Image (cartoon, rainbow, N blue to C red; front, side, top):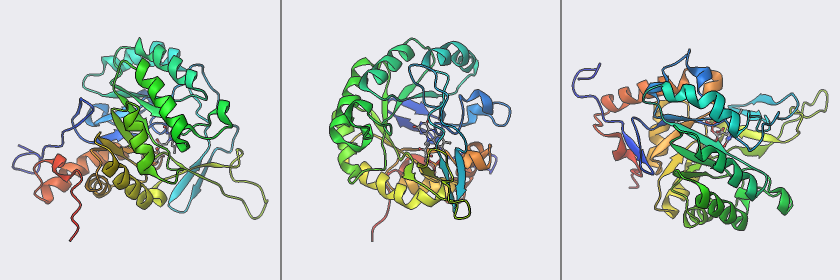
Length: 312
Ligand SMILES: Cc1cc2nc3c(=O)[nH]c(=O)nc-3n(C[C@H](O)[C@H](O)[C@H](O)COP(=O)(O)O)c2cc1C
């Protein structure tokens, strides 16, 4: 019986063999290592969470200012600050393992193919990681600094390498800074991705007209939040139609109805990022709201939404 009376809606979904109790996953970079959110929400209520992007060595990130709020969005240039894969295993994972019933995914990035390879090799030793999410929105320094995820050949190389070493399901997180997201989705699938997640942030910038200075010290930054949602929905739709593997959708989700929208476009699950900046409990509230939404709309099984857009 549910709190609303009657049978509780079934919110379960499956991504690359991983059972999630609901489709709501906290997105990388907006949820720390999960432990930071333990006191403000019930981690066990989420479908899962993705930890901050991990690299081979610790990184200090970019100088401030690193965040700037825009119309319905946010610019960030945190610079992939993190404690490094080894410290994550030693300092964060043991505690996360003790929490029952949480799905922890590790986001991985690098500036060369070997960085991804070595970071995944380190993480393979860590017990309690459900999957890897490969962030390919990083400059490939060996090849002129173009993002791995913006060049089909680099994408193929990095995914093939990661698939070879990864002992866990591999989710490839696509960059939206491309001409054809369908092509990149297909390349990632053919190189061995078990699932896709999209979208990462759009390269963007803002200038203060008074001081004439960039709003972000790094000059360019990643745009996220509701401002990017309609483009994200279109990209999820295009990607889901180009591949057979499951797609995790994200970009500006801030309500239960937004989750349903992404699922109708073809997403099996979703991630929520910037909304957690505005309200640290956003992910948990959206899980509760989703159950209510399904109940109010007489939906027994949330998985029925996947790819269910109606074109008259
Ligand atoms: C402050 C901040 C830090 C982020 N750090 C990462 C990261 O480390 N790795 C990654 O793959 N994506 C990172 N992202 C991108 C988000 O996970 C997500 O793809 C993007 O923000 C779009 O979703 P949203 O509009 O719900 O935030 C970051 C986003 C923000 C706002």
